[in-house]
Image (cartoon, rainbow, N blue to C red; front, side, top):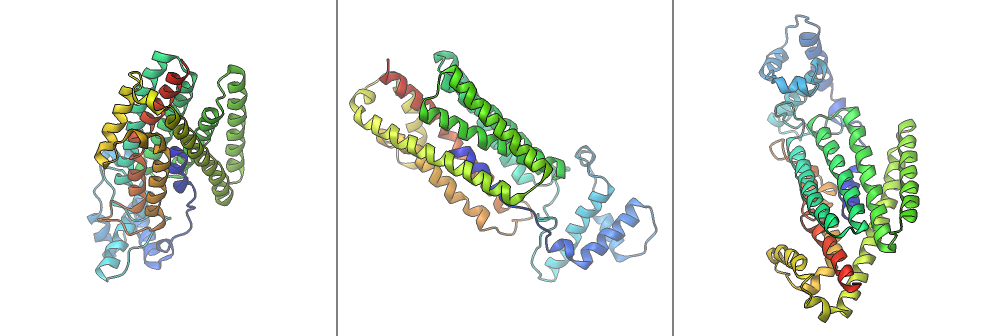
Amino acid sequence: MKISVIILISLISPIFCSIGDNLPEFQECVKLCQSYKCQNKKIHSQLTNDFNKHNVIFPLNYLFFWDCNSDCDYKCQQIITSIRSHNNQPMVKFHGKWPFIRFFGITEIASTIFSLLNFHVNYTNFKNVNRQYRKTGNKMYLQYLYLLTISMVGWIFSTIFHIRDTSFTEILDYYGASFIIFTNFYVILVRYYNIYSSRELYIVQGVFFVAYCLHVLKMTYNWDYSYNMIFHLIIGISGMVLWILHSLRVARTYSSNYQVLNNSISILPYETKILTKLNFLGISKSRNIPYLPIFLNLWLIAVMGFEIGEFTPWMKLIDSHSLWHLGSWVPQLIWYDWNIWDLEVDRALHK
């Protein structure tokens, strides 16, 4: 459910040529800067003073592969944006992105921080799930560990991409996100249909891995945004539907066994952990727990509005996409607590 929707929006936004790219003043600025800075030509222009004013270069800029040409591109984005602001003209995008202020070589500081938050919560969840796996030996916990591992790698790729946007880091971000979506669908398929025998697991894993490889090959030889959008919408929505159906099934099971589960000492620690977090929202009732995947899906659908209703970055730092990353972090604070609770309820009923 969650990861497929978390990454879905960032996968379906192709980068077209932006208004800023075609501005004659921007093109002239880049040409002059590259001649003045990169080719050591003496050019007498008012813009040369602006180049020097924006010439704060930190060692980390070189670490993140800001060469002279890309640095000129960045400086000219800032110069043209400042001029447009002074003339009460709207901010425009360059190369499909807003002209963010660079911090120590980092292109998008807010999205970088929020991507790291997503990585951290997955890392914390990995430790919790791994503890349960070692305690119970339940194979489903192992499937969640696969998903968490791939999610951490995916969020590392997202962080790298927002630190420095290049064609290579963009590819890493897309392929990492694709792998997360595939694995999320695989995990809910295993959970919903209770595919726990080793032979069946190997078959399903093999099918998904081959499908992912074919997808990567297709995108490598023909980078098609429309195909990528449709493909991931199908996988993502299918995963969401299965999570909701699973939630409803758990709700029926919980309701029919409420007296037993409500007095179960073995379930109490997991239930208490969830209720403690839900208490901040004022909905800390045991009967609400089974429906959490539905609520979390609705939350993610709601925060998709940040991507749909895009706005000019606040202080050239925080844009709608960065807030989408922040919004996607919230459900993960409780999502694996619910998955642990779900498996422990199942174990308590089948002892």
